[in-house]
Length: 404
Length: 224
Image 1 (spheres, helix red, strand yellow):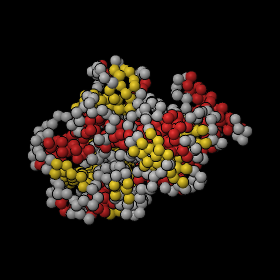
Image 2 (cartoon, rainbow over the protein chains, first blue to last red; image 1 turned 90 degrees about the horizontal axis):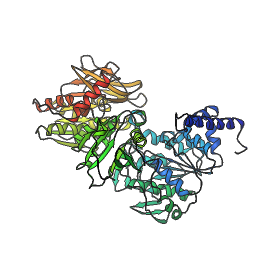
Image 3 (cartoon, rainbow over the protein chains, first blue to last red; image 1 turned 90 degrees about the vertical axis):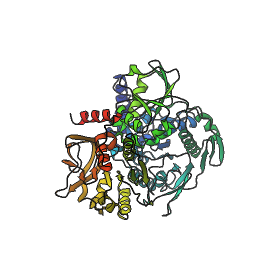
Image 4 (spheres, each protein chain N blue to C red; image 1 turned 180 degrees about the vertical axis):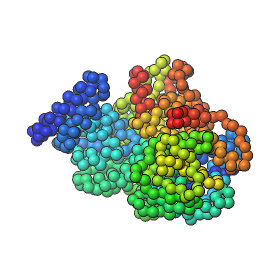
């Protein structure tokens, strides 16, 4: 441990380890948040202290944080500190940093906490993926989120490098106040939250991935461009051969590779490792339950669902969808009406979860065939693996009840 | 029968476009020809029988009020067109509303209500009694809406806040307003049919759908 850390920090770090160990052995938690909370209570400056002398990449945005964090960790190679437990607020960061001393550090950050975390950990790189509506019961209106990013980045150290999605107007609004931005042209299909200009609320003109407002706010020139599997990372051509599905994962990979290039990792070396990432905290994994086999996909909000629905093969019949509306999901399932479920016409959707009737009603009005699963035993056995799309707590439930 | 969702890019934060889909489906399933139209910024106001206004963030809400004020929306409603307005849409129909800070902003003046910034945001499930029925949904807004005397609220609050903790929304000829945002017509099939019966001037056959179970489940959860 560094000698620059005072006794207060040492006591706090011991407390983090102890509480997390107790949490794990008592079976009460996964041992990542409770200890971090206690540590921050004992030493409010603990996150800053633990970040000293590290090379830190932060990853934030509405969708793709966990996957992009994992791709950045794997792509970097060697020993990397990361918060791979899903705890993406300061207590989770503290727990990850206490548990692992490696200089190379990649932290996933909840978008609402990004401004605060940037102030504490002095990152080398911040990756900003996308911004869209999410968890609407928390009044975190998406424009306010962009405004908070903008304010934080305007006062960040001038050597901070921001890697940001040039195709998402809200991200550009949040990122353009930073001194150094590496803009990325990556697939971004969800534009429903960026129809009007984040600066002046006039309508934006969209033309393919490009967009502009008559107030002068316009898409910046990208240095990373992504076209299907061919990618150019700051003049280096790279070919993706990802093990995870979907166009959105190509966007995640492009941004991870750009962030890694910014910390000096050759994109050609990094891509070979990023291509190997096959399952991230259960996402995209093949699971077994009750004689069924399924691929488990996480989709938490309209943009995430729209992206996942694109991966449903046309020639499959059954699709499983599980929806909850617990605190971690957002208590308001109105967002189901922003999901383009009409694209599932021709499939039969099995509706699971606490809010399966909300889902069934949505599918009914979209003229999609559905079955409400009140009794799990009634699920037809299927020879082929099905896709299971689940939102946050439903995903956790299905991960827990199924096996690899 | 034409149904128009107005400015979905400004007033569509909470899945509000779903109301248009539901209204059109419930007409079509009874053999009544219906079309759904979306009017965006810059489009002329469509000639529709039913206009739908959704919820939105503060800046877009002000822009939507400006756009709507520049059309003949109010006279069309006075001439018999119907309107369902939720959340920010409800506030826009009034004389004035305050959103950011306490700056008063002019509404379209269709209904004699004013909305001021409430002491705290109202976020959570909303259940009201509307006559002998229940209206179930979710609200998320910072407004406190005051109705002019004589103006009828849509419902009496059982759970949640609505206008002011006692009443929710308003109801005048051809006009329904509520803070239950998003797919309020999906969750309350009876409300959708009430609006559609007024719109068509016909008594509609009962229509069994998945929504019936959803409505019963939410009602049982919120108004036991």
